[in-house]
Image (cartoon, rainbow, N blue to C red; front, side, top):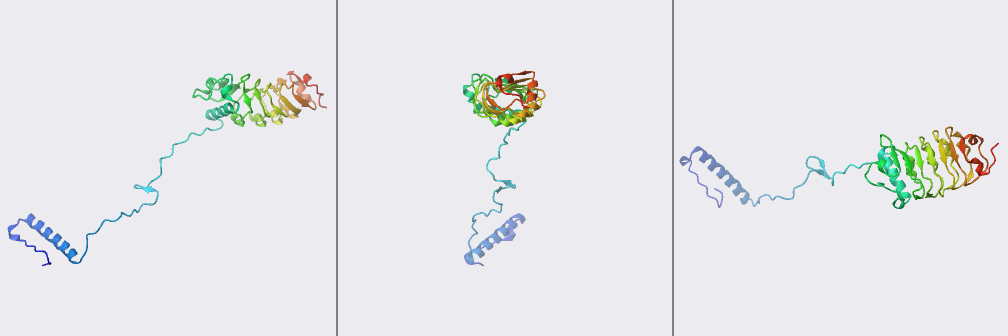
Length: 255
């Protein structure tokens, strides 16, 4: 008998289930009494130690913040890339003060934006913003309009130099940069236009010599270079262009 405890069970007066319950009660009482006699306390529940790896939640799910939202990236050579190029042009040339900027920067299809025409795939093929009060420099993003066939930026107040990357627009057939405030030399890269038929650069502040590479424009039908500050001589092959204003330059033919 353990000190402080008195347990008496009369098995003869109990049924089978009652006897089993009484026996279980007796064993529980004896275990508790033994623990108390030894000065033991009931186990306390300390902090639960996590065995999970840092940054993981149950089920091996990373405990990150929010799941990242997929980001739409405009790809050069796509309708979305063309849209970004046009937005860059708008921002670089004071679009809010254009004479007409109908639907620009809106969610409307690009062919509803003023001066823009697209093909069946939504790619820009014509950009005609002549006489529309554009100012500033031609942004490099226009170089991504790889399907462009006609670029009309004449009769504005554009400044800076003619960007050499324009020569990478291999599908270009018409280029209107006339009547602006463009300066510097005519880039020889303009001779890369294998399909170019019309080139208007007159009435700017262009200087230097006429690059002989312009003679590579085998499909050129109209050439206008007058009212600039050009020097040197006129490449002979350019004199064969059907419609030109080379006589107004006052320059001799190259020998």
